[in-house]
Image (cartoon, rainbow, N blue to C red):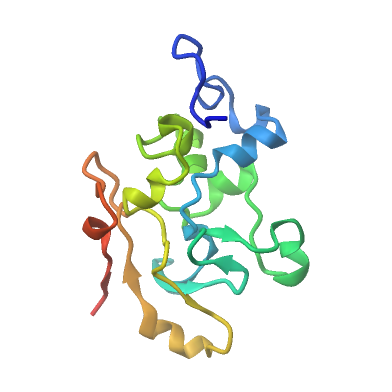
Length: 174
């Protein structure tokens, strides 16, 4: 069964409903599967600026970009941030391309989102996901996270997001 909106004449649920109105199933389907929310971020305490790393949560499957223990993640990783409509509107570190953020801001989903394309691989093909570009936090000291600072594609959202994984390579911040 395709993830794409089945009837092009009908308004897709993510355009018709506020985040709070979505069923649990609709909410879960809205996730684009990029895996970026499962990366460790560093925040400058003075400025509030967020620095992205490629250091993944111990539960992130770095190829599938999915949590290995999604249902029990909060028990295994107590500081895992669960996304709720309220959290989506207040978290400053959600990627600009995040479907939850886009819908909260009244914007539409990108072409590569599986609900638009009908294919869960387009997020990876577009180079938006973290697929195969992370390292695990397991055994890493917090002070070593600074050695893993990166810039991810789409941090500055525009129409020119990468069209292939090769075009979406990130660079280490000097």
